[in-house]
Length: 288
Image (tube, rainbow, N blue to C red):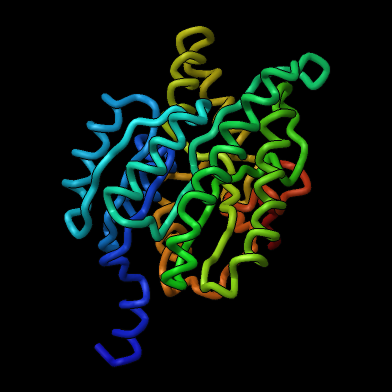
């Protein structure tokens, strides 16, 4: 291996870094956290259900022996619980170097039915909780002149959804997209990067559970129709595999991504690039 190759590889090394990943027990959060652990980081998985957290931490420790995995229960809808998470991680590690705010909540209500209370709850979990954790961890990042912050956003923040009931969720994710630009401008001189990762449609545990409900109520053909409909909306022609997000997390959390900040990085299989869904391909004409 050449010196250039060695330098490129070591830029992804996160040995000695501590990361907190909210929503880290399942889905996209789990695989982003696993990517950091595989790069050598100490990773704290934070989510609501302790039983799932323990199971996820044990699994990740086996899959990513390069790092160290711990977990902490938190209710991001409760400001006191968020403060407890921030305080406990700061006391435990002396500081947090990497924050991935991945946990989210949606509200399936049409825009003319959303109550103030429900809207506030969606904004609390998707936006305010992330800002509270960022505020808690920034002093350490500024002091050491190094920090990495990323929030999970959604392709629904870039274009309207035909699925009724996404208004509050879309507003929350769009808020994060805008927030990271100002946050990046204010923290960049301290070698801190702040970005959103804009996700498309992935086969998460939540989506799989939904598909199981669809199958139970309407049959396997309905499931195939659902998958085909969403797949046709992407340039890739398929839904995303959660494991495909590991590399982006490793990039943004490491020295390799040190010049990426204030960005909304889209990994949606080309969904946002499509003007209309793919149509069935016609039979190719054969000329004699």
